[in-house]
Length: 367
Ligand SMILES: Cc1ncc(COP(=O)(O)O)c(C=O)c1O
Image (tube, rainbow, N blue to C red; front, side):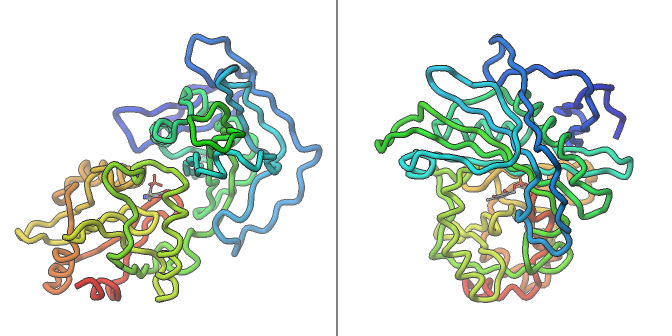
């Protein structure tokens, strides 16, 4: 990766889409606004912890169980618009019990990561894609939209402040969790007039799955009685309700010795996602062509940043046919039976790339 211009992040939008944003120390006070451009800019206020607590040993800590010392928060009201963003010591929220984020799941989140490269620099992986998806989720959730570059700049400052949490080791990363909730204090269901956007950071060395770590195979439970998403629903955005609703099937998968659900859709049992991951099939297809295939963005699946990156890289490499198309259980089962399947794998920011075990017990359940 080429070095960034001094003093600022590199926003990679085009030619080399797999690049991230490089975080460089910025000594100048920054000014920005979380509002439509043209409004008066406001400064990010930063309140530091009086003293940095001793950092826990991250070895063996499960994904998402440790948080850094500071967080970012921005309040919004219909009357006043976006308030100045604040970085403060990490703290609990105080919410009205009737708040619409809690009552009606008027809520969304994002997940992206910062990594430290061999050159010692921290990089965010393709964060503009997450900002873009977050805006689409906000529109679907009736939450206000925001300036993506401005939010990213706030996140960049937070990550910079917490950069010492990410060590120079291969598995180390900083998981960034922007969250956006309706804070309407009213029991009726209506478009929120108050909202809170906040960002917390979770450092980790570990993997998302307590079993089935990257590099080891994952078992999937394919159970057609459960449906994750449907056309016209919210499966293509990152609203929390999608995940709460998937927990009981996920628990059933665990009881059956599998880590995740293989989500199916429709009478033809279309393969859509693997738990909270997009799914890829590398095989020799029915026509004898080597193919890397993944389900299309037809409203049923989340448009994953990792999925997009894999597609772009695979197309760039040009070693096999790369396809976004409907894949059914029948096709997969036939491929397995014929010995044409080279690999089935899930992918996502938190889970990275997870190969699915050859002995997929549940695939036979649906056959
Ligand atoms: C349902 C679902 N699919 C796919 C993904 C992968 O998306 P990404 O690669 O952007 O992390 C996620 C990750 O959060 C997810 O929740």
